[in-house]
Image 1 (cartoon, one colour):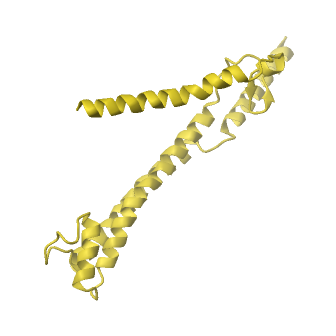
Image 2: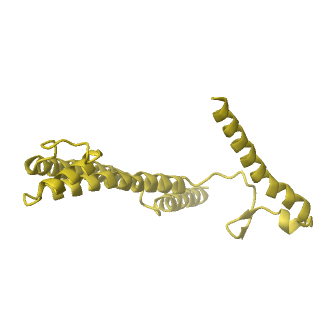
Length: 184
């Protein structure tokens, strides 16, 4: 146990030293020539205008969240594809017992030499696994499509929506101001 703690301590210390060493060397070697241009806030290649404490447009946040939600779902396809592909191979009745045992062991994540004869997945069981997997994927897609339809209906995918509402509000205020001026 102390040997493990010693190795972890040595590893952690060496990591800290190897990370901090270039920073300290760079601090002493780099030139120190501050100018107002270098000290200015840099944002996307554009000069900063006004205060940095402005409200962030939530459309960027919503689009980023939607991307993460719908893009991360792709990670769930990999295990499904592995199981569905293995089941479709096992559904073939022409497989030899050795090949069936090897494919079954791979699908069940076991060592083929440990599996006993008769414990491999049959073609009928593989077909039912394929059908179940196919309908599971359909349900998964249905849930994704319902979520996508909800987001679309709510208007979160309309990038111009907020600009249009601001334009309407501005025109309404202009119309009210002109009515108020003509009334006086």
